[in-house]
Length: 391
Image (tube, rainbow, N blue to C red):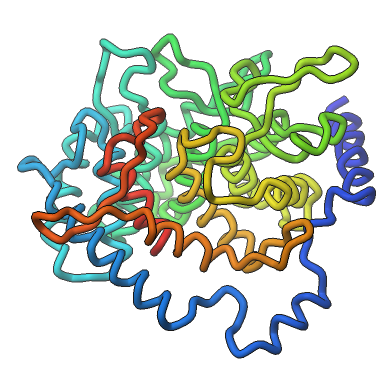
């Protein structure tokens, strides 16, 4: 039955692609024309490159100054906030931030649990300590440091994530949720994206496991099936087809009802890029109709003024995941209907530079979202998102 269903799904998407869903795919002729210009597609001109580097330098300066005495950033009950800051400082390649990075790592290690997870108990809140988010983000940051002493920590964290995957006779099977021990144990695409990213980026530590230990991994096929269930089909119409929604019961971006009276969960920007990137991490081909359909949705809803479908909510996570996704997809130019091809790297870089705020006391630069949903009124979190996107 699963093979029949998969075949039907593939046929539906393929027919949609042939009928126009894939029209946003870049055309060879356009690529040929672009290659004749003085500046290669996907590269910033010299002036914008200098501006970007200056914005990054200001952001790193500001971010480093926000570190607490215990080595953490922002709320020390959630070590992922520190891990994101560590990643931003690390990716800069600037050795002057080694002390802050080391202090951040030392704090993260105080949050390592006996079960392998990297999180804190927060029993007074729904969702607890967000153990999946925190563990996945922290182990990704620790792995990026490339320190042999941290390999066992990352290995144990991978075991924790693998054990957190939900299996059951329900619509959530194959995915990952906030914390299996809390009332928010259901799974969703955002948690699943972070779990998938963490497991893919850290996979090489399994080669260092003792032969006596079982390798830790997730069930990738079930993960893909979960992600697939959250992608809108062609029959949902051009506003939604190919895009993703949050989870099977919570639309986040609201719903619409089609002519047949069927309730449709609206697709939205950040979760569509997260879903597309999760498929890529899961080794789904970039030419697969599910990936191409997600890219097509992104083309049809291209813009940086808002998180499409969500307004200003989650705007900087949108910038962050857009940058990571399109870089992984290998797409330099975005074809937009009735417009010239858009150089997304230049457009995003320009937008982030424009949105940076300058601290008048220090000259450092930071970013913050006036819309506080998804914690984006925290300038530490948002500045880490912005720096990672620029870097």
